[in-house]
Image (cartoon, rainbow, N blue to C red):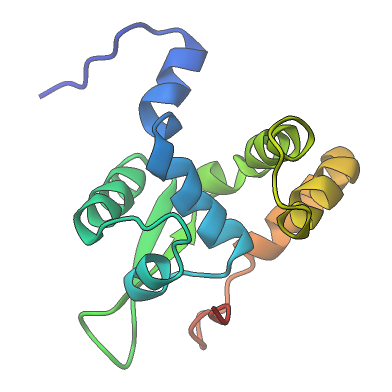
Length: 147
């Protein structure tokens, strides 16, 4: 069955993939929080995402080609979610949204450093951060951020 879109406008097409409340927060936690498996994303969610919403967003992002799921070598049911090239291309978008929130929405200053630093680094800073995110370490599972 072919996928239908509200329109072929590029902004609409992007919003259809990343335009809800939870999707950007899941991507934030993968990009900036180092959380790459379901349990870490669920338990590390400051906003309190539910298991069913998280599962649905991870599935949607995987289907859309933003994330890829890799199986854990030591635990067959455990999977790691990693950004694809398309997902990593969202780094400057999320940095810009975060920087806007830092400047205009009264964000906690302690939580602003990463996005403001990334935004101030411009295109080169985003490229370097993106390269680090895409670095593949197939022999070892990704490092989890301590929460």
